[in-house]
Figure (cartoon, rainbow, N blue to C red):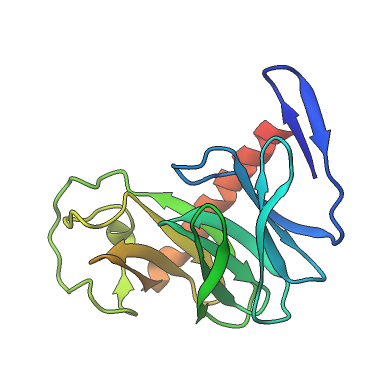
Amino acid sequence: MMICQLTDQTSRERIFDNEVTCISLRPPKQLRSIALVGTWADYSVHVISLPSLTTLTSVRLSVDIVPRSVIFSLEKVFVGVGDGSVFQCDFDGDSLLEVKRTNLGNDQVRLSILPNRNKNRKRKRSSSVSSMNHSINSEDLVETENDDVDDEAVFACCSKPVVFYKAGGRIVHSSVALEVRFSMVIIIWLLNSVRMFHVW
């Protein structure tokens, strides 16, 4: 793993004991200098301090499956793995603890953050959002009339894509309606392509 600082044009490199499978450089709001790293043979997720690249804490997943995607959102560390599961881990700044596993299918999971650009805009609703597995449409992904819903959500792209979001003080997930799945995949692909363009 190598990090390059544009401010002083310096770089730092670290070689892990196992192959790196995924990286997230999007830190939580309260910690601006961390990265999340998933590794291969030890099936672990590591919280790395930047720019030193030292390990702050790690957690080994409860299954021997390689982490394929990792991201910090909704005050949790989300880990998507190769068997179609998503793990939620608590991170308090010092320790990382696995707290929940959600099985979404059989394909590997890719995680992306969806910003809620219309948090304060009210909309008409035809069904309650309290259900853990209700189907939502494209408007549900970006609009809400609840004050206790965070301003972003986590989209898990897999054979049975879902959106994780916070409502009523807890994290719930909703299946994505079939008619919006293809559009969401295209959006995520375009966003990733733009990121790759800027990186390279």
